[in-house]
Length: 607
Ligand code: G6P
Image (cartoon, rainbow, N blue to C red; front, top):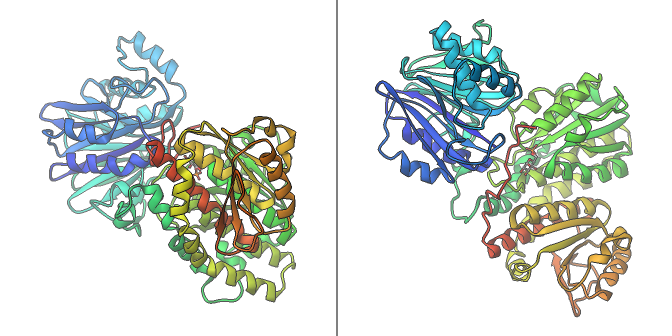
């Protein structure tokens, strides 16, 4: 999704803007641009495609004040004229979000004589601000007045060549933070873009507006009331967002899973027992009379929720429903104040998940828990309880390590709920905790399957469809496998609970439709084998991920890879890993843009 970088410093900031945009590339974008103050004018460079092209285009540009943007098309096709920054008179604006009243603004501004050169909602902000500056020449105040007329979600950054040396930024709904330092002050959509210049971050609240110069930062509310926001020292390591020896971020992130899981589970420490307090100081109190759980999430995060449902009902005996956030927020549901709302999100900024959480709260559902990878994100800040997965920054659009760490967090939630409901003996608890602790080692062993999976991947290159089968708690893992394959290799893939095969999808099975099956050695294995026979009988090509001790033989049209050990309840965490590797290697064979698949964004901050 769109990314913003802005800078006011004592030296040339163009390399900082470009480097910042590169760090935001992972969010997904289709065009990029920057604008700087150059003498008595604005110098603007825009390009469709990669930031690398913008870098070439701006190689001779120099300035101490500027704004930059990666655009993910919403209003108007990806094109140079729709790329940000948008200019009106002496000002230039970049914007992330959606302005809902842009049509009426556009009508009014056109009537006033402004000529629009793009199809974007953002250009309305530029002209509205230019019109406002005629009445209120102070840029900071003019942006305050302008923002008060905007309806929707936005993060914006503005420069004005008639008031050089300053950048004004504002946020309402879309992420924006400041990076402050002795040599300059900066703003960006997330911290990774600014680690190159500072670790000192200031998170703006919705309705904040800030004026940055090389030596000062002033923050007010939109009505001009001054506010103080604390400086956080970012713990993100710059190395965490470097590619290192890997070919792609997705590959790096798949291989970081043992460490990400170890970091996430560190909270359990050396203890044989876990306490509700790992979800927040008030957790024991808040969870005491919880009678059910509702999980809200989108995309991959929803798949971790669907998996957890099996755990929560089987181990903790707590009714659990999972809803896609974009559906829940708009349907009429029955509110239950005793229900625990669990919002799962890697980024913590997904617009639909945030809106679903707010919707639940508006219905009086105040028991809320965020499971999230970004500590300072909106979803974390708006929940009563929190669990921060410690996966580190996830750059690849296709989520991998965020997913497995979410699963680990949800298993901890299961154990805590089971304790609260008195369904867990100390002995069982200690066995589960030992299994959790062993997870990083177990995942490492699964990663050793990579070369075998590479061989399989070659057979998928000419396929247009694939079917993923799983049963029980591995059905959501099949869903995640299908999502990964379609996201990055553009092969149409669907997941089915294997028992449903004969109720429709079997009609599709032939030699051109590979069927990938998750076949752990659990109580459903024999039933699954019967389902697989149905596929085999129709000439389907089967790719089976079994456990070391599963009785699954290779035969004509049946390929079997074995995971090193059977992992009981936690088996979904191991079984998703070969599916991540499979889609990664299929994408490599197909030559797609693995980390930035077409049309997709990492962090979907608009509806
Ligand atoms: C986008 C990403 C997915 C992600 C989903 C939810 O669609 O491309 O990888 O699963 O958003 O994101 P969240 O940050 O809320 O987990």
